[in-house]
Length: 287
Ligand SMILES: [Zn+2]
Image (cartoon, rainbow, N blue to C red; front, side, top):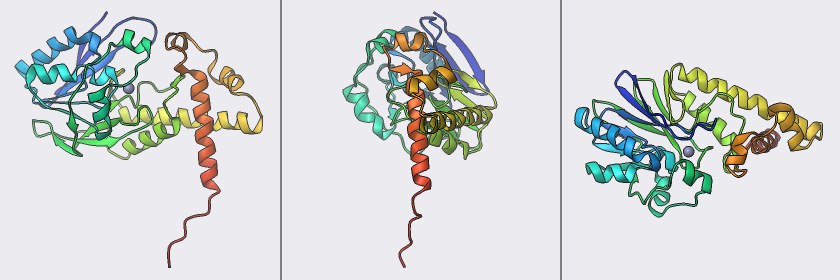
């Protein structure tokens, strides 16, 4: 069990953590302006509550903003809303999932805990978050369909949810898509970004560089994986073995939801799509 506090200028970061099993079970909540961004997993509520109380007493908390519906991000939003009587803002596509709940695999319930129903309102494209700061939502599907990242105008800050996490991912969840993830990374890189506030890695200085490196790594992986599959006619598990090695603990813990094969398969599918689009005739403009 480990909690810790970090700071970047006026941004406060609070890290909660659980089982030290070699995978990242740390989750970060952030406080900026008079706003909390993401709320940590439900089973860490006791620790999150004291951070939230301290922020409310010292800096002020007028609202909660979440990046997507996953329990390690939105898990305590309902409790905080009740405790402080403040609104919760979430992406439009998250609202039903937050209110009605969603299926969760056993390992997620153990690692993070199960959230209760959360009433949230749609986050506007631009949201004032206190201290003169404006939050801009950028849709970033790939990890989850409803995920958005938030950038703070004029500061170069990006609250990146689960877009970054690591420069060289070796696993993918069965419901994640490498192609969409890459497009989302390139979308946020259009903006001037210096610091990335990652939900699992924490504060990443030179955040744009880190995101660019991740994109470069995934693009290279996609290119090679497809070549091996289409031209060399090698099976997916063979390509995985060559490029990423054997599956480790994460596959076992997640009951197969996370695997290296998922990553290779998603890379091949995405490259197929790019190849197919390359050979399409350009759309004709109506005369
Ligand atoms: Zn997530």
